[in-house]
Image 1 (spheres, helix red, strand yellow):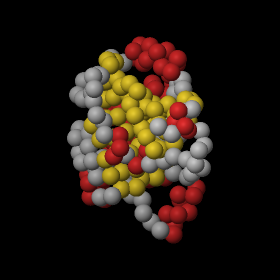
Image 2 (cartoon, rainbow, N blue to C red):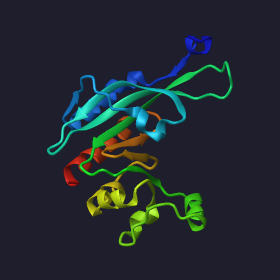
Image 3 (cartoon, rainbow, N blue to C red):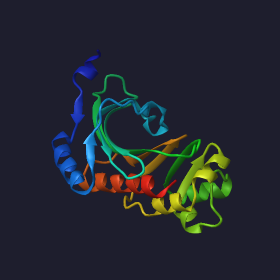
Image 4 (spheres, one colour):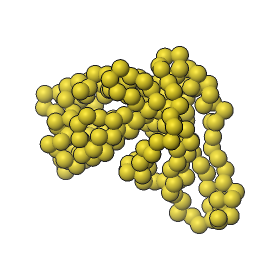
Length: 203
């Protein structure tokens, strides 16, 4: 193992995780999972990390379908050789969907996105749902699959997300949502609310 890894500094909120879980359990039926391989390597949102591992995972019990809260440790890629490596801790929510969406990326739309779209239209817009299309930037690999899956119920659940900054990535039937900001109880509650509502309202 290289010296940079031996001297790794861990950016951690490990002490906060029990308190976060206690808050989560006040609002949801939550159980620790056994060993589950969520195949995180398939998601492009982790492309800036050389290694992403699952530190712990919890199932959020829903009426129709279970969803998951994942605590991860990620090692960023560094261009400078010998630079001390830091390990970041993040939290994500994951759900399994009935429809095959292909590959989809959704985030809040920025002014830069709007300008790019004028020059090279690449995103999927919904003429019948201007509010959604004006709010979110949605890139898809298969327009037909994405349109079939992104029905009114699905779009409404996304519109109601209470996180200001997030990214959603879908790989076929698997959806993950979160960001790389600090772990907090409020953030975990918002993530759990989203995937729980997704599992309860979307067919």
